Length: 140
Image: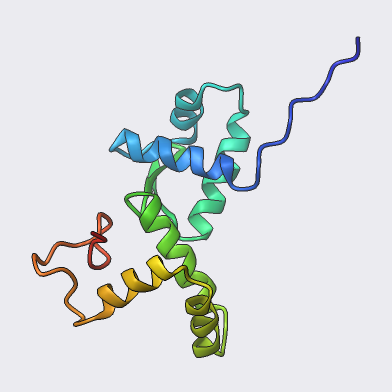
């Protein structure tokens, strides 16, 4: 029976796994550390490439750790990552008002209501809480 190659991961899945590993570590990790933590047979060079791409996107910071780099996430969680991606996409467009108008027009009624509540007085919830990534008002 011929060897069947493993199925490809969906786009972005490995980046998400690497970020989850960094988030759970609560300390800077080298590519070797991440590779060991993932434990699914990935080559160190693959992990290093993913970390370099995340660094280019501004999703992780890196500092020298001997001959390698150690990486720390610049966002605290998935919500912060999604917000960063949205800002990046918005920043690519010259006509921001059209992009925002189309985005808002596609929101569900529940999401539109939530957005209206968040933007209502500019201060967010009455208790002044912030989103988990510290970027703005927390969703209730």
